[in-house]
Image (cartoon, rainbow, N blue to C red; front, side):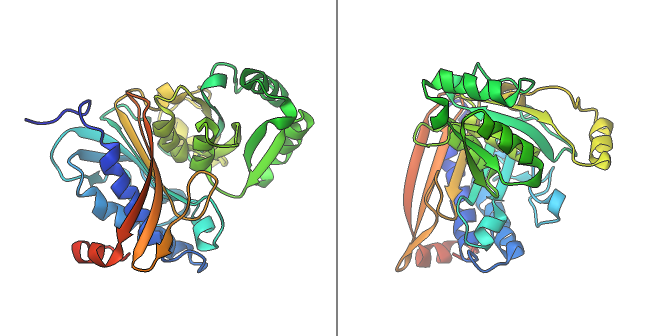
Amino acid sequence: MQQHLTDKNIALDLVRVTEAAALAAARFIGRGDKDSVDAAAVDAMRIAFQGIHVRGTVVIGEGEKDNAPMLFNGEKVGFGDGLEVDVAVDPIDGTSCAAFGRPNALAAAGIAAKGSMFNPGHSYYCEKIAVGKEAANVIDLDAPVKDNILNVAKALGKNVRELNVFVLDKPRHAKLIQDVRLAGARVMLHQEGDIAAAIMAIDPRSQIDMLIGIGGTPEAVVSACAIKGTGGQMLTRLAPKTENERAAIIADGIDLKLIRGVDDLITSDQCYFAVTGVTEGELLEGVRYKGEYALTSSLTSRGRTGTRRYIQAWHDRAKLSKMSTVVY
């Protein structure tokens, strides 16, 4: 009898996909070669997906905006049987972090019931605010930064001076950084890590209370898979960087002004998420080596139940190499 999506926690299969991508990419940590990091992760992820009993279609692929190797949008993944699902992948969130040995590089993937995943078309950037369950109902993309900061601090029962706000360290965020500091909160700057930031904002183990700024639209959809079911919230609005991007989004028939939350990005609670650390990070440990073993640290979540699992695995590289074409 075919097992229904509601009966099986596909996240426990999906974590093998992110583990494979992380293990493959880890061979290139610190070598300064972004293309090799991305190519290794993509190839490993493609191969590992073949072992999952779904008929998946990639809705969120990786690499089009920066010409990196990619699991392209529309590509079919999975074993080819079972239920039809939408797939969102980010083989490496933080490619430069991995290439240059900086923290918080991750391999991430999400699956949701077919037709339930927002397809951003040619949108690559969006405004974002992400918070955990306690502050889910007090954020507003149209409100001043100070108001959001004060409301989140109040909802969390924190002094605003103790509020940690994750912001990507980009020139576009100069005023945002100033506004957060003027509101009294702490700015935690990171060069990359859209997905890590969103998860840390809703993870009770993390010191990050909030994510604010403009980041990747594909990464927002991947992050929504992780947030779904936790009670946390992420508000987004498309923010094209160029007139060409704006025109392409309009041609796709997508509303530029609409604010989309987690339930708009992933409309079904039948969704699953997995992420594995590549380099050391605040969310997850990176890939480590002990003799013939490689150690990975991962997180999985399931939208319907809200269950999150933190998984540490020891991988015998010699045995894996006999079973797979992936180089570990």
